Length: 301
Ligand code: ATP
Image (cartoon, rainbow, N blue to C red; front, side, top):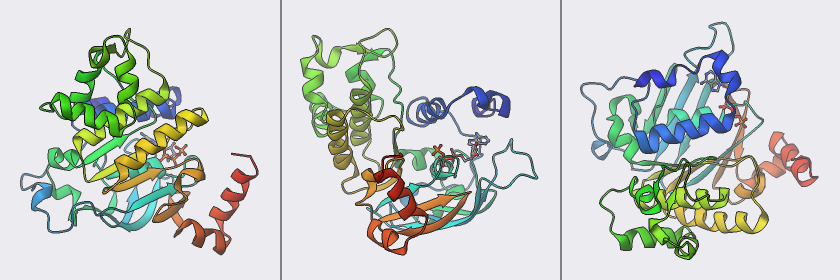
């Protein structure tokens, strides 16, 4: 099953746009639970046994090359270090291809760092069981994969034993309950391929409801590149705020407007963190971030 990841050779990747690979990422981790291309140590411990605080994420001098990258090319991540404390909202921004999404792949150990260490709850992810690691990470990606099944079943992938009341509570917090209730079959409405068609914003809110049901310590938010309409975006944003509450949030952001309130913003360029700080700090320092901000405000985003 791990082979699924590796057919993404350079030739195929040309044909796959980012959205497809993000969707693949979400499918692998959230639902099909395929084993990533790593091996679990026989002495691996559960995240609960780790000594550090649940929700902390730390990179120590992480250098990373994709397995299929030519050896002489520059690494995708080059000596990246950062620490995110439990409950913090951390955002990664930077030009396309900078390595932001790759950072998010190393947290659930989709790939191993080539050099350096990735720590989750204070423990090197290589020493953690994959199932416990993944159980503490929720992903809201650009493209949500819905099975050809009822909405209730799609939600229960996150928590099979969830009661109807729990499904509804999660859907309410994710701002999607009223929409579901307005469908002729409610939670029994069949969605996914050949099913009832949901809008992009509705699918995202279903994904958020899933994360709320899963109740992980860390969420990875891969922000949509294609903007929703303003009303829908506001509704999704409120749902995201609910999901981020009390959890460590790692946001891969394209629009700077969504991350002005981040506790810390990491600016990634060419595989390195070139700046970090709050929105206000980064604006004052007048570097890459302030230029990106200026460009987006000026309407070039
Ligand atoms: P964007 O803003 O466009 O989403 P990003 O900052 O998230 O970009 P990444 O997706 O992390 O950038 O990609 C960083 C680099 O790694 C790019 O040059 C990309 O082509 C390369 N890359 C991404 N995925 C793979 C892969 N599976 N195999 C080989 N190279 C890859």
